[in-house]
Structure formats: C-alpha cells, structure tokens
Image (cartoon, rainbow, N blue to C red; front, side, top):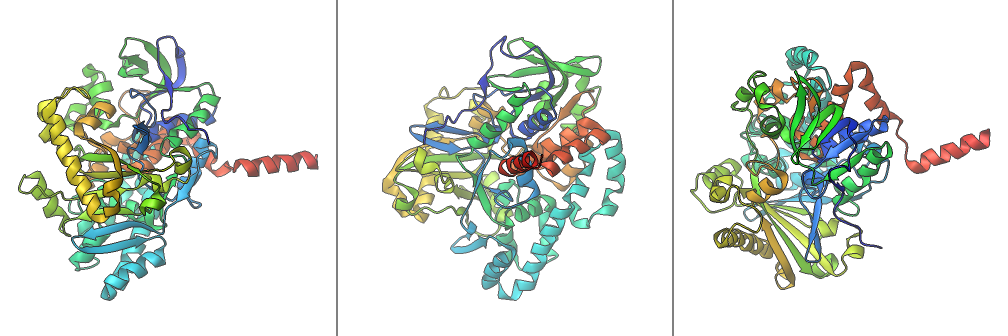
Length: 556
C-alpha cells in the first residue's frame, strides 16, 4: 500500500482561487467541511479557507520522525453501525470514508486503584457495571434509559438552530414544554436524582474529559449525548484521522469548489449590514453570496466581525456572559514506539485515569495550585485502532496522552511562535511530558524500552495552530445556560453571514458535524432546508446505487 499524504487541502496563493463563489467557509473543521460538502451536493461552488497547513481542524493528523498522530479524533461513536451520523458521513464523503470498530471495551475508567470497563452494547454495559454495583442495577438501567431518551429528543432541543433566528426565538419560548427537565439540569443534579452512590456517579461520569467539564458544571445534555454516542462502542477512521478531510474534499471539488490551506482570513466584507465575501490576511478579496464562519463564536466575533458592527449588534456584551466561557486547554504527549501493537500488547481500549472519584475537587485543587496531581489523564492508542496502520508504518506504534492544562501558566510566552520560545519553555513542557510518560509506563511497563520518540503540545500549541486564544480544545464550555444563548444561533445579525460547527451545537466531532448540518439548513430557509434531509434520506451505498442502475438498464 502506497503511503498516503497526511496533509490535505490545496495551498492558497493569490490568483489560485476564483473571484466569486456561491459560498465561502472560513475554517475547515468538520462543521465547515459538512457545510461545503452539503452545498456542493446541491450544485453550489464552495471555497473553504483554512489558515493551517492542512485541512480538517481538530480532525487532522500530522506526521513527524516517521510516525503519525491524530490531534482530536481519538474515537467516534455511532459510525460503525447503521445510524443517522453514519449516514451523514456517508453522504458528505459519498461513501469513501470507512470506519473500523474498536474492541468491545472502548473505555476503561480508573479511579485510584479501581478499574471499571465500559463495554459496547446496552446490556453488556449494564451487566459489567452491575458486577461492581450489584445493588445499583436498577439505577444503572434508569441511567442508560435516560441517556437514550435525552439523545432521542435532542433534535427537538436544537430545532431552533435550523430555523430563521426570529422563528427560533419563538420556538425556544415553548421548548421547555416539549422536552424533559433534565435538559436544563447539570449532570450531577440529574445523577444524584437517580442514585446516592457517589462512586457509581464518579464512574458514570468518567468520560467527562470528552467535553472538558466536571459533572457539577456540565449540562446533563452534553453528558448524555456523549454516553449514548459511545454506548454501542467506539470506532476509528480507516487510514487515520486525515481520512476524514481527505474523503470529503472530493465532494466539494466535484461542483467546482476547493479547500485551501495557508489561507488566513482577516475579516468578512460587509456593505451596509450585508456580507458579500472575505478579505484575506494578504489583502486578497474573495466574494460570495454567503459566508460561513467555522472558527468558533469567540473568533467569529473577535477576529472576523467588523468592529464597527460589534457594538451596534450587541456582541461585545455576549462576550462577557457567564454562560459563554472558553473551554479547557490541554497538554498532549505524542509518543512513538518501536514494535507493532501486537508485539507491544496494545489494544484499542482508551484509559481514563483519575487519582480518585472526586472529579470536582481534583480539578478545583489543581486549578487553584493546591496540588500538582493531575485531575485527569487520558490515554489513546491510535495505531491500534487503524487497520491500515501496519501497512503505512510497519513495526511502529503510537500512543497519545492527554491531560488538562492552564493557559495562565504560559502567559509569559504569549505571542511567541513555535520553536522560538526559549529554554525555559522547553524544559517546562518536557517535564510534563516525562511525568505523563511515567504514568503510561505504570500501566504499560512493556513500552518503556520501546520508546523511540515523543513530543508534547501545550495550550500555546493549540493557540498557534488553531488560533484558539486560550488554547481551548472544546470551543465554549457546556454550562446549562450556554444552551439558552441566542447569540449562538447560526444566523448572525449580518445578512448572509452564518456561524457553524461545534459552538452552534456541542463539542466533539459529532457535535461539529451536526453544527454544519443545522447551519446549512438555517441558511437555506424553511422550504429549501428540507433538501438537506433529503440528501441523507436518498443516500445509497455506491455499490447499491450502481447495482440499481444496472437493473434499470437491463429492465429497459
């Protein structure tokens, strides 16, 4: 098998792009790619502009020193079996994107010296946890049923995002009458209404790192979506994380569009209060009938929005809302090892390592500087998850170790660039990397002598590569009140300028993807928006579509 290029997209240069497009998408994360692909399937010519050297946002991958790592696609649920999410991915990639199921134990929750397995399948999940909490079986069943119920009602909760903003406001007035009260409660509030067993609650919330907030603060909606998302197990893109952008881009190109990298946008172009294109950082202007911002709410307002309209449209006050806060920053160790996953005894199960079950206290003490003990360590084995890995990287394996970080610790280097931050910075981050590697070796001692290469990203890395001001990795935090903010609707006060991606829905690949779907529907309007749903409804596997075509020819 020929080695596939990890970088995706076409390098932007003046004169390469057309002067006018039907739509421009700023940012090539999964939400923006979904916008572009859906519009392209409707015959629209779409230009995606990505400031990074590769497309994909947090779904991209990178290679160094003979290894490859993903930066955000650690695992995805509901795509290795028939589901609405798989159908969306199939539609926008036209069936090119394939998924490999992980092992049945997709997550292992480790609280101190105790371990708990999350096993794929409703009954398996309940049975396994009931071994540890036999007296809680009925409550575990209640919990699972509730997460499924919340997930099934999510379209009602987010319906306003697909409507014109004025209609969405009216809908949200009656929304509380249409859905259960748990949508407007925190995770801890809901779980303590199900069980008084705090250890069980700590286990059930052991995936809080998937959205970056402890159960005290996170909306139960966010928790339930994640829990249900993985209940049938996890999966990984065949060919690695870069396959996501690589297999969607041809859909965009088919109708004359393109995905450009090294293409930083300075501002949207506005005449009166109508958007008509974008101005690039190098001064180029590209015009379009509509522009989507896939760079998050904060960057949309602070970077792209014309300053003279920010105050007029009341956006500055939204930046100060308690419900609108940057999400957590992180460290991530990217490590390469000599030997195959089989030789090194690596499976696909993710590890969630906690010092104990008091998630809130652990985080609070860490952020207050009361302890050096990390409140969470997440370990992923991406090379084990990709069935094509050994063909591309024989006799090699990779591991990623993620933990929380504080941007405040890196303020002295704010504004500096990669590899230009000095010895103190390098020593600081290397100390964290070595600490995290030691935690890995405690769990996987066979890896110590196989270590070949490692590096670590910090909040400054995320700031530099993703232009996220505070090094945040989940967009906005998921407080209950975040989901009541009208400013997070796709339709901005500027005509023909829309937001898309995770901040108009939720964090995660699935949340970003649905943000792209909903914002596309919103832009098209109530009548034409149904066209998006018809794309999913009418999608057929390429082989099936080909067979049906042959049958029609034979019948003729």
